[in-house]
Image 1 (cartoon, rainbow, N blue to C red):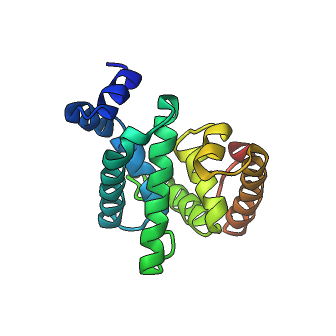
Image 2 (image 1 turned 120 degrees about the horizontal axis):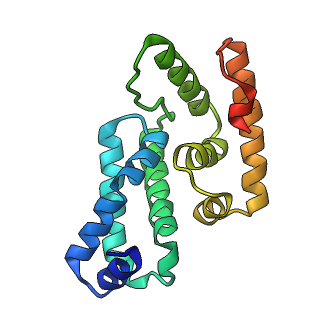
Length: 176
């Protein structure tokens, strides 16, 4: 069933449609939450709060085409609210390496991303790990597209500097 049809039914109070939507976006929500939060338990809390908020507010959703943007924006807000409560630093994402070199590279990249300031880390996570477009990121974070591009450029420069200092074997073209 198409997302738009599920969204319309969910807006009218059809619970199975809402559940199906949440299952469809479950992995995306987890990846975004994990990119911001350290512990799986914290990710689960943020996702649970997001689902509750979405359930209560879905009748107010004005534009069905922006459902994912709306959902991710709520999730990001919940993640940062949780961080503010706990005064945590954004950590490394979990990875499952095939070999030590791959693990080391992923760990270095994830540590470098987690060391970026919040505004840069958010756009980097959404762009590179969630494959969202610059327009979608601008809508989610509520900033102009030019600011998203600028932050991505700044993040790339900072990441390359950090990774070069570590002598991490990462090609410069991977971040362009």
